[in-house]
Length: 304
Image (cartoon, rainbow, N blue to C red; front, side, top):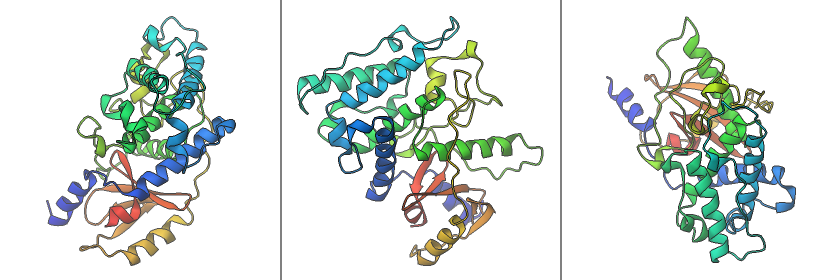
């Protein structure tokens, strides 16, 4: 393998740094999503963790998911009984108290009952004491993916994932598809290698109702039909017309030690240098995001 290709293969599996830009971009996206679902909560990027630390908003959303699950009438729907019962939420609690921690623990128990992978969960102190904000963000992204398969609205980044996964599916099933697809990393190796998990399941139209389980809800590819057989919420059309110009500008500004050319494959889709690594670039508000392998990064950090 050429040296450049080897270098880029290593980069595709490179853990995210603790860059504030990446965390801020995803936090803004999650805050806007939660605010659209629960307008009375008054959450934004600045107050994000403060609004979550009592566990009340988390419980409210989990119970919304449970209500949607209970609307599915099928004896073949394979889910643990623990995922069907509304979780008890203690309201009007103070941050850091036992009651607030109990709210958070109840939500995490439900996530485990849904067979979410441990690397996508967080500890109570990660939220209450801000010990690991990234873990909280990754967990909420995965919870949002579960909601997407139940027909609920999703954050913009997950809408991008759905578009990209649909493109990858078309590419994989096309007779003329080549081996230029990027490699995918698994969250089971390291939590820092994950911002979005892709399942290894292959299906052209989503799972049948008889085959649905908690695991399939938490790991099925987000580009597929929703697990309950309904149509997913319509995706907001992502504007790709300015992506190429933004990519060119950031490439010119790049101060990396060794520059790798980005070769345009399709709007918002690029091959990196002489390698087979494929990346997707999307603009999220004022952030330029790259999906490479199984996760997201900011373009300037990826190029650096």
